[in-house]
Image (cartoon, rainbow, N blue to C red; front, side):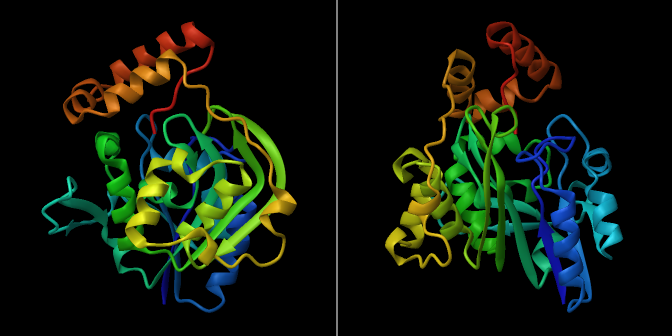
Length: 288
């Protein structure tokens, strides 16, 4: 069997809670290699940084190879057009990596974070990195539908959420670390997200894409069986993202496909936006 592992590499260097832990990836790849022909760890280029450099700087490439796995840049993989015939959907097709679609199983290595634009980032949002184009930012006006399609097409067989260190506030990369010392595993990425967001004190109604996917799949939170520690044992109210002027402006842009494509077609614009934001509050906003 060929197993695809999706890490979280939302930053070009390793930061606990922000990027998947290389040691944990190594352990997982080693276990998977014991009974599978090939284990592939793949990620796509970031909007403003190449995946190859991130693999090296985060230590993930070295960890994967040491465990007998393979790393690939999904942005350089062959792509397959996946059509969605539903006439009511704004997302008619997605171009996805052949390696991901051909895998016998996908393992989603998620992290527990708040997110400036999505409120919450976990297992399903991690699949967004499977879209190989670093211009996937153009899909932001339709994120709920895109995430739903990715979830139903890729359908991870196993989700491993490393929540030993989580992120609160203005995540996914500029928030504050929180020691939770938790590890969540599940055969359902959506169930993982529903439980994780509840642990964080977030309501599903706040997280539009999760609410959308839960309704589309008819999964009710009370249908999820939680084994081991219960949510009430570990729950903590996370600081929500501060929706200040720069975030509001970018959220407004994201609502419109034309504006998103026009303004985010240039890295120079992104750099200008970052400079303005730093001047406004001292740290940049996200572009992932």
